[in-house]
Length: 580
Image (tube, rainbow, N blue to C red; front, side):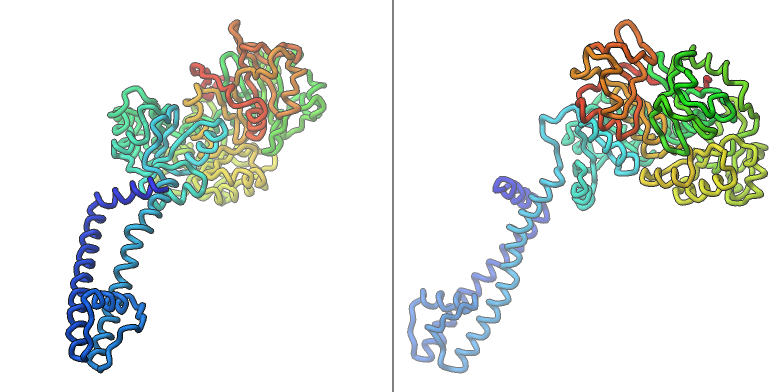
C-alpha cells in the first residue's frame, strides 16, 4: 500500500496537473504564513493599547489557536477593537482551513490512494513474466464469447481499454483489463506483446488496420487475427500485418449453406478432422423414420455413426432406442467413403428442386446465397430495401412479414428458410411466423446475441448460429491449432489427448458418455485416424480422441479430465464443404 501510494505521489509530482497543484499549495501556505506573522504583530500592538504585554511566542500561539478555531479563551481582548480583530482572524482562519485542509488531503492523500486502488483494478502494464497470453482490443459480442472460451480453457488474456472508467467497469464484471491506447506502441510494450501468443482485434476495419500495423511494427512473427466487415478491407488488413482476416458474415453464410438440407435426404458435410467427416441429413421421407437407431443399423451396415439428433432445435445424444421421426435431423460421423455409401442408399428419397428462401439481403444473406450457389442449390432472397435488390430473378422485393411476398419467394415449397437479419427480435418474429406457415420446413436463424439463441429455438428454429459464437470459435480454432469444430450453436466437435485416467481402457468401458455427455467419434494415432471406432477399441496413452458434445458436455469433460489435454497440432479442420 505504501509503495503504491509513494509511486502515485511521485507520479503526481511529475505530471503537469500535479505541479500546478503543488504551486497553488505553495502559494496558499505562503499567504497563510504571512497572515500568521501579520496577525501576530497586530496582536502585540492591540494588546499594548489595552495595557497587556505578551511575548512573541504568545502572539503566535494566540493567532494559531484563533485561526484554527480552537479558541482556548486563556488570552482575550477587552475592547471592541480587539474583539473585531479576533473576529477577522477567526474568519480568515476558517476560510483557509476550509480551502487548504481539504485541498491538501484530497490532492496529496485521498486522490493518490484512490488512484492506487484504481491502478490495482485497471493496470497499465502486465507483469514482466507474463507470456503465452492473448491480447484483445474491443469488448463486443464476439470478444465476450471468446473470453468465456479462453477462461474455459484457462488461457490468460488481457483486454486493452482506452478509458480508465470503462476499464474499471469491465474489471468489476470480471474481465482482465489493461489501460492504454490501442494505437500507442508503448501500450503494447506494457502488454508484453513480444511474449504474447496471439492478438485478436474485432473493432472496425479502420481501427483493426491501425492495430495490426502498430503490433506488426513491434513483433514480426506474432499471429494477428483481425475481423473485416468490408471485403475491400481484407487486402488492406493483410498489408498492415494481419495474419488472418476473418469475414464473419462469410463464415456464417457458409455454415448456413452447409447445414441447409436442400429438400433431399442426402448427407451434407459441415466439417471434419482428418479423415473424419461430420454431416447432417434429414430423415424425412426415408425408411429410417419410425424406427429406432438400433433397428436401422446404419453403423453396422454402412459404417456411419449417428452421433446426434436434432428435434426442433434440441440436440440429443442418441441411444439405441432413440426413435427417428419425420422432423429428425441426423448428425452423422464417418469417412468420406461411408457417407458416399449413405447417400447412394438415401438420395432417392425426399428429392426436391425447390429453392431455399433467404430472408434478408444483407452481408450474411448474400454470403449464404453465394455458398448455396457453390453447392448448386437454388435460392431466393427476400429483401425490403430496394437499393439492395439487383436486377435478378433471385431476389424478391418486399417485407418478409408479408405473406404474399413469402409466397412469391416460394415459401410453400421451399425445403429450408434461412433468417439472416442483424436484429434478434425480428428474427424471433420471423421464426415464429415461418414455423406457423410451414410446420415441416427447416428453419435456420442467425442470432447476434448469444442470450437469444434459446429464444430462437423456442420460436421454432431447427438450428441457430450466433455471430458471437462463430467469431469466438474461429479465433479459438486458430489459437489451438484448429481443434474445435462448431457443428451448430452450442454443439462442438473437439480434439484432446487421451486423458491419463482413460489410457488403456476400452471406449465402451471408459464411461465418457455417461459421465460427460460427450461421444467419441474418432481416434488419431501415429498409424492414422480411426473413424467411428468400435466401443471395444482401447484408448492408447499417446493417442488423440475426437469427441462431439454440447457446450455443457465439453465443459464437463474438461473439468473432469483436465484442460491440459489440448493438442497443439497443425490445421486439420476442413472448411465447411459442399461435398455430399
